[in-house]
Length: 232
Image (cartoon, rainbow, N blue to C red):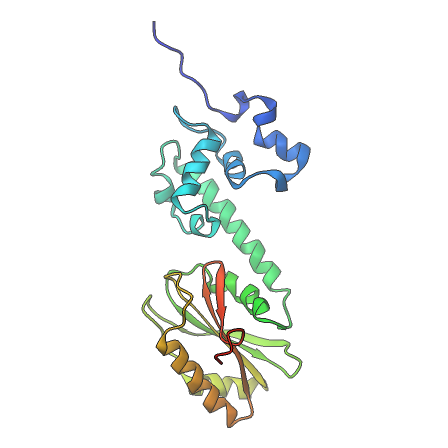
């Protein structure tokens, strides 16, 4: 006699195990990342519940939601039980989260510490697969006048035009500058080239009475601050 297939659909779980009901009764903050993803996909496969499948997907990216957000639809579809519809749902939800963080960053109008710079720029460059160099221009109250991408390069590096940086600072009437670039490799340690361009910009800006306040290296959800480390 053939055994009846076991259903791992969330609707067949006990009430205490249903992440949807838990969210309604206790709030979304009590759910684990896996449970939130399970709500998105609704069901697992013949061998795994939605939560178990979600845990396996998260484990593949080191339980890092930023890394999960980088997976393409085709990469997500490689997991048994994840078809195109579920993959698109996961990708869309993570993109909404990224955009929400971007809107929060827009509220930062004054930089008082390196963390402010990180929060300001992370939505723009924190998850990129290529390297970019950005400049934040500040007035004498450390309020953000303007932020702009200076250059965009491959994963091995990017070019920085010192004259362009200072020209824009003068045009904007900025008295302070914060340099920032990302390391797609995830490494936080500044390279010799990173240190060299920092000193080059610092020396050139001093002649115009413009201060280089910091140089931030973003690497996924971490950052390195030249100012905090005392090497500016």
